[in-house]
Length: 258
Image (cartoon, rainbow, N blue to C red; front, side, top):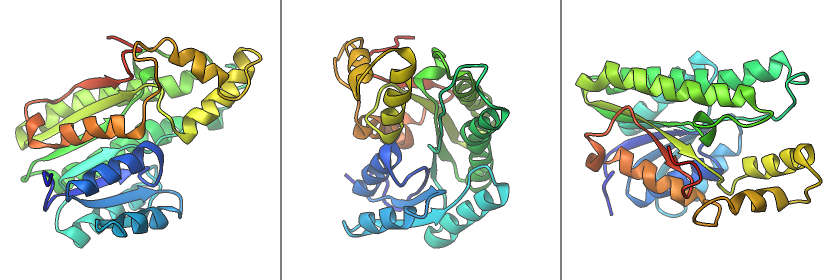
């Protein structure tokens, strides 16, 4: 398939996990792919895509830094001529009892997960006005159901959902759609951390045991893969989704039905 031939996609947090799965999917459909991350490994990840024949570039960017965000989108436009799709995927999590949660952790989580999404959307819109485009924001199952020991993370992801709805109304007549995704339990480094820390706080769970118990509550009885999320992202970025905006869609095997 070549649905995205001639189109440029920017993916933050695109060097690993769900972000890299999305980058691979867009590359397989002939998009120009710019993957951004605060980690220097982003260049190696881009090189791995290029080795498959993809048109890809890496860019080091802190999504909480407005100057770096501007540079990211200017870079994408200069390299490939336009910015047509932007996926706001960068995110962080920490887990702690409320009395142990620090102001620094709260601020960092809100800055990356919510402010970072806003700054990237803001700059992407500057490049899309007059041409249309697709914005896809990464929320979380915690935008539906805040979980124990992560009030800051839940708040940040509820914020992404509200931001998505507000922006969708503002840019609808510009031909720009804005949607959000709520992944459930997806096999990533973040979920390895969740399993380890929640496992210690919620009981005497060994490695993988807590996640496995939670997977049993999923109707499909399996954790998701990055490609499960990438499939929805590619649909929302395609012309088939031109009449879908302001929506937040779960990708969780039926874990949360709302």
